[in-house]
Image (cartoon, rainbow, N blue to C red; front, side):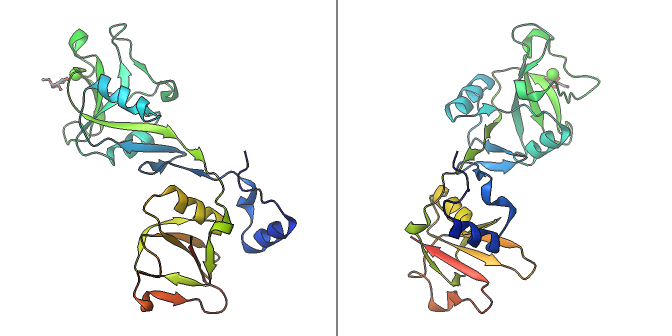
Length: 242
Ligand code: MMA
Ligand code: CA
């Protein structure tokens, strides 16, 4: 794993000067279209489907239908849908014995005292954020069509090759698609590589030492010239384009 251990002494010195701690950790990212939370990646599918269809679809996408392992994760899932979503738990094999994903760790969040109550006609578990259900679990017929949330692992970002980028001491304003905290330019270039919408990026340095990476949906050539702002001394902005 290459991560962000930089190859030459010069670059190491440069990086120590510029940032610090993160220079040797592999940079982990969620694939485009997946949201990062708690070290994993999550994706709400657009269509509603049955429990079995959802489980299959998540596997096709390289993940698993989610079964939360904590109240925090349960509540994070609620932020992804205001409808009802299938959880990766069922008692299809042994009635009353709920089997969830291995990473669920035995966490349960039933709407007590009534659920689960469906016997052999309700063998799959839903999470509902409605007022009635309050983000708790219910057993329901697996053929119902609900939202599906897939969970996947973060992937090791392949290092962006900075040689492919022209770096300028400026910032492109008014074209930001999203912002992420970052440690350095290479990380920002990598994030740009992973987002098909990204055409250029800015790394902004604040006096507090904080840096943010801005992913832009255009380059300085499409921008109004007033939107391409030269950095003042000391350097506060680095712009990158391919
Ligand atoms: C519905 C269905 C069940 C649930 C009950 C609770 C009528 O059935 O969602 O799974 O247990 O409501 O009243
Ligand atoms: Ca039920």
